[in-house]
Length: 487
Image (cartoon, rainbow, N blue to C red; front, side):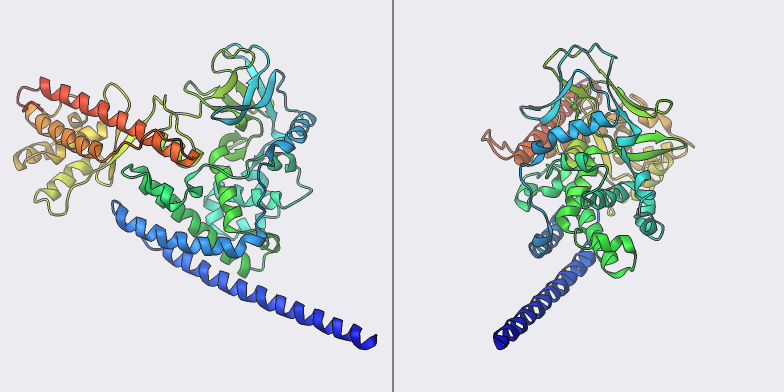
């Protein structure tokens, strides 16, 4: 019996030793992959080189996939658990002073969860209040154990949204967290571009949002690698708590939570980045800002942006943001977006013989460093900056000399300010450019697809509408210019 027991003990120790060896091997492998990500994401990609950025992204994504595979045992994969925490979440809100009489949390087709009115709310009436106590802010992070790391890390000192993401991860891993009912009720994953596959991202072409998406993914991958190295090399107590929970999947989730739920509120003497429970359940609709932080009563307040009847979904206005921003950071597209715009990449070629004169004139207007200009979803889709650029870009030497003699050539940003001859060339140039961009958009068909692909199709449809509107506008302008050739 003694020999058998000794044999079992020796076998157990051998297994433990082999297990530890396997873990160390995986840690070393993971560390090497993280270093590769850090090196790749540190490479500067010049604006406008989408092809190179795409190849660069595929390299980063391939390594991230390996990292996710190794980290899989450390990442909790909870599916469709959110509604199980609804009752506890609502009770926690009530127990801590939130007021939302006449409001329920419900499913809405096309929106997932949102807020439903169970009574009538007239425009301007108070719908709900959220006390400071339940708000999770960057200030809470600075008052927590994370403060020791914040004090020595320049990235966290300058980027409160990242600070809030790390704090969220710490609180998520803490079973005794005050915010546990709120964190448990958060979505398990998001529809931000950080969750898109390369195949899905490729479908964004020719949208300028593809380049922005690649930059965002690159930035988050770099942040992950940066913090992974900090967590596993610095002797800071709070970082030991992060070691077992800091994975790419968890960091992507925390960052996406911040992007989709971020609020900036004025606490005491400065604005603070924060999560506002319940308030962040409201979906977006065009209107006016009807949410605010009441410093006297120390609470967040949400007022009705219009009349809501019983069973209506309660919406708020997220602000004047284009669909590109909503798509990137919130994971949805709003077709009725009156503040929508399309970014055009424009610049003066290095081979242009009049480059220096054009850049000098652009500099006087503060436009020399701008590489993208907006077309808007309005009756006049051309921004003042874009109007000035196309005029300057299409000037000859004599015109450039004449305009450069002025200390501030302000007329270049106003209608009719540059003269018919310059405008004829400028508008014709932009019309050609818009037609070329429009021709690159292909019909994606009407087949039902994933949420990600549906959002891509909707985004591109909105961009095409902006281009069609701009083309029609430019044609009408050129028809009225006496010196212009008819388009």
